[in-house]
Image (cartoon, rainbow, N blue to C red; front, side):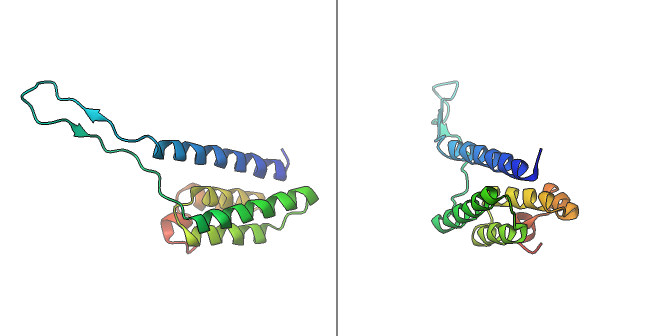
Length: 132
């Protein structure tokens, strides 16, 4: 599989993850009835809430993806430029998992195996305060 195809498939997977996160955030709460009528009142279960992503971060991410798409059309990739753009997304919002994922894909495509391993092991920008 060529590098552009790997990146494209990675972005596609990131999009699916984003849809899953969005769906989890829309789950709402559910009431749980107690087994006896003499017990305490029904309680609400805690729900999983996806972190809210700022609109500015979304715009930065869309810009980075558009830059990737333009580079894909010319089949000439500037991985350092793409990395800077996705890093800017994480600096704006450290909860933007798709941007972190794409940094890993870029590290792998650019041949930076050590950084790719760090990102895979969870020692990437989100967990180290964006200092990698």
